[in-house]
Image (cartoon, rainbow over all chains, first blue to last red; front, top):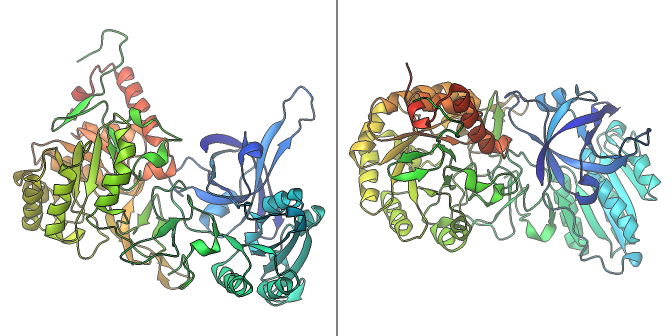
Length: 282
Length: 309
């Protein structure tokens, strides 16, 4: 965890409204865990004031074309332009300076995945929720787990990075609301079918809250272990402001059990959270 | 006073007997209980450490969303979520005892009696070097705003907690009043040893697409650079209305901002929202203040404080 001023390597539109941002990030390939995030600040100006949290899509090491140049650690973020902050971000160019705080938070947990070679994992993503699942997929594949990605979105434009998952040997299943790619309908329907076929699978999900709710119900019913990666508005990213809390399982007004998405998350095992109301939305 | 040697300028200040190695401390609620910031900042560098507000019982805080970004600022409606005085005394204080920086514990109550009870408990805890009384949080309907906007009620709370405490009592004032000088005089007469001001300004943000308020609580406290001119004006007014030390708070992002508050007469400053944007902000501010004084050849920060021409 550190705060550094660093440099943009590239910032490319990958699909309408979606960008890949590469940033020099010393130490990240060795340290960053699947599911962790960074807080990025793209301007020294006070407007916009706050940093923005972004999941790490991947880490890597760039080998300089000139052997004299040392290799360079970097991270790649994938983001969607949704507001003023991300609109400004879309204008970043190679060589621009940004402030990078991270890697932050608790990533995915691999402890419960015994006999990895015989395990199945189902990764469920809604739209931009695919971002933290790529490093996860890579890790699970390395462990010998059979990984399948179920990717949902409004339209074909919202289905990202499929080729990269396929290159890892991950089977991908796509569903879109409008049927422009994959099957028409919700990705949670695909999850139900796949859980029927792989009843002992570990499920990992990231996406909009209504999708996570449906995933949680399906997994509870199927008794499948579930980890979710949550998204939240954040100010500090380090557990100080308490702006990004979600309700824990034991939460009540008398005995508060609020968990910081930034510090205790963003990845939670589903049992840790209260799913009775719309977690995080209330 | 001019410097004639290469010595570093003196940054130490005194707040009602509390000796600070420099005038920079966090604003309550932006720094947790300190531990969260240890990867980014040496807590020994700070003038003091101000904790998140603590109450008699644990407090759940407000529903989410609790944050909304606004032009050059942010609204928060955390709702004073905290672990309560018992958990503070058994868990949180332990870490604070491991540092030598003075610890200022911010506290509040939902009722008059709760204020007094928390003060009593705090007076029993070792390494509570000073307390900061929050009578100004705008988020809690039953508490903050009522105590902090009526000079008679505020004075009553201050004098009641004063009798329970042996350590310096700092009273944090709300800006959501017609005349902050009136409030300042009321708490000074009631026994406050120092004043910190300002707390956040009550504000609101709406979402046009969804036609709703952006904070679940409806209103929230505005902080950040957007409020600095208001804070500076109020600190100036308070400094000129009381004789106890004043700690300036509100939108301080840089050493220059801090120096402005000190120039108008604040003895120290609190840094709030800047910590959230940049976790090492206070270290940079302290270094910046020192560098400024060196450039100006000022040997002692106390000659800068209140030296407005």
